[in-house]
Length: 401
Image (cartoon, rainbow, N blue to C red):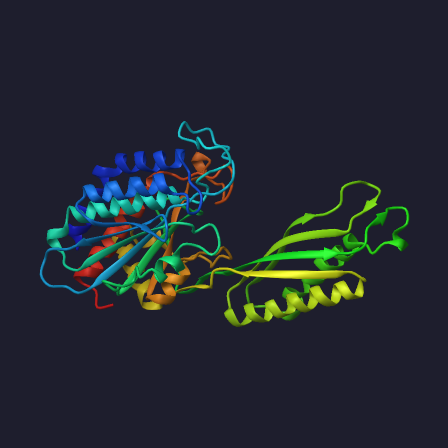
């Protein structure tokens, strides 16, 4: 595989300027969930130009393509996924390729994921006479917005005809330096649920609170009580987060409002504790409101499940990373409480999801994903493209996984 590694690095180096151009073009024209028509057109035209079998309009704006190796008979199928949507937020970088669409930004690296995957398609297309089997490319819409695009793609049969043996994916992480990849076997990313509270009281004059039923005071008590879910109901070694991230209520200094609304998030790494947390959220909301003489409603919008990487697939990917990038550039990071609907693909097929290092402190590339100043060291495009190409090639030619 040494010759293959050098060949893949050479092919990746040749197309690196093209990958940068693709990434910057997509970055300049961000599209939100299920609006990714321009992005999907770029993807489908690029893949069609490589001679791949392309299917458009999957889960509305997704693209699926197949690359078939020509060497011998091989039934193995590798699925590779890249998400393509942007976020509803402004960009505050100084790049000449910054977002041209007000209030929209690729602040989570999906532009880079897309460029890398197109690069993998080009690298492997140049080598298709040297391997057998099939590479299934999944360009997924709406990772950033519930219910996500992965589940609808699965419901439309993307894991059929042919069915993959393994699925791989990656995500930009600024906390990991460029040139490094992070792998973790087991639960790596959290389940996420959206929380919507409505606290209803009886409004009145701020000088006469005894004639009102104050939803603001009740809200303060509720927020404090909700924190006991983690501190008093969950095992200390388990990762659980309850955060209230928005409070809306009131209009003046002397008016007690009728209603207060809250929004928040629940993150868990254990599906059983997730269900227990749902129950405690309902109980605390109901009984705190009753104690304060108001009414409260809670809507829990179930989000993505825990992302669990298959152990054998992760170990195989780590070994490939050691071969391709070196031991020092193959790390085991801490799990994170962010969520990813790639988890649905991993429920349907064994595989693994790794962290692609994009950070570079010397260049000031330190801002986290979902920041208005998020950026990547574009050398990561070569790392993500080359490694994924090597991993896929090796799986199809050598692996017994």
